[in-house]
Amino acid sequence: MLALFQALEKFLKLLVTFANGLMLVLVFIQVITRYVFSWTPAWGEELARYLFVWVVFLSMPLVASYGGHMCIETLTSRVKGATLKFLNIVADIFSIIFLGIMVYYGCIMVARTSFQTSPAMQLPMSYVYVVIPFGCAVMLIYVIINLIKTLQTPASEIKPKGSE
Image 1 (spheres, rainbow, N blue to C red):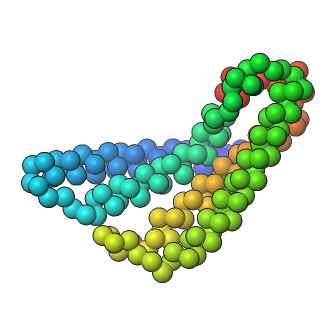
Image 2: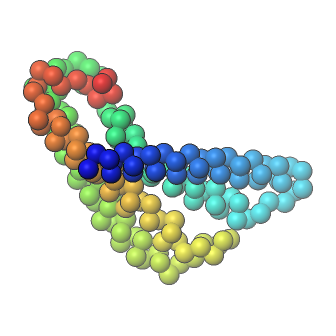
Image 3: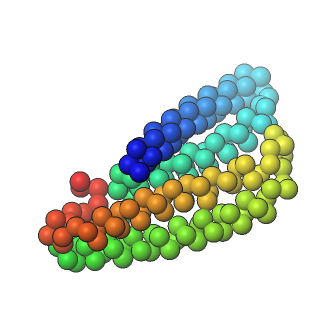
């Protein structure tokens, strides 16, 4: 199972890196064509926008796997032991609920947009939105794993997230 998660993480890193690079090139070309030729291809801006959505939702699980998501550090840096463990458990439970909602409604959105196409590229919009339930589902798995680890760790060994 660990090998599967490592392969998934490696694939996500590769995909995010490629999408970021492609987005950089597209935006650079958009700027050059706008100021040099006073013309920009409509598909370039649209593709860059969709790549940005993909980068965001594919990066979320990667950040979650490192425990790097936002937390209220002013609170968690001041508590230790059982209180910190309790706060981490509550945060993970709320994250699981939120991500479950995102996966559910993301799937509904993908189904509803399967008949719509993007204006410039004529790409089915479900291709754009499929990353939302996918990214949230992968992140949900990481949060569940983190919750299990937190529950198994003695309160005296719990450290604030991101300090590992």
